Image (tube, rainbow, N blue to C red):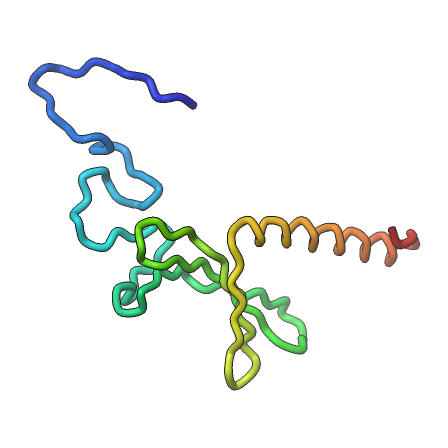
Length: 128
């Protein structure tokens, strides 16, 4: 994908992004107020100082030692990057681990490798 210049009618004046919805979930001429990422639940972000997505449960519908919820979080600072928050929800005081998107991507690959190994072992294969 590459940007290409196109001509406009002389009587049309629009700012960049006027018609295109950016990844922030807003048009290019958004007000100077707090701009929410498209995944933000928009629930009291300024007071918390943090955007949050809807929380998703990583439950399996089977008994487990503890439950885990996952969500995206991002500081309200314009240059802040989104992060992934994992939260243990079974204890009286929930414990959270916040990972960068890059760390989460690597964790995803490592978990997939471990699951493939466990599947091979269960099917009579050998551990790698």
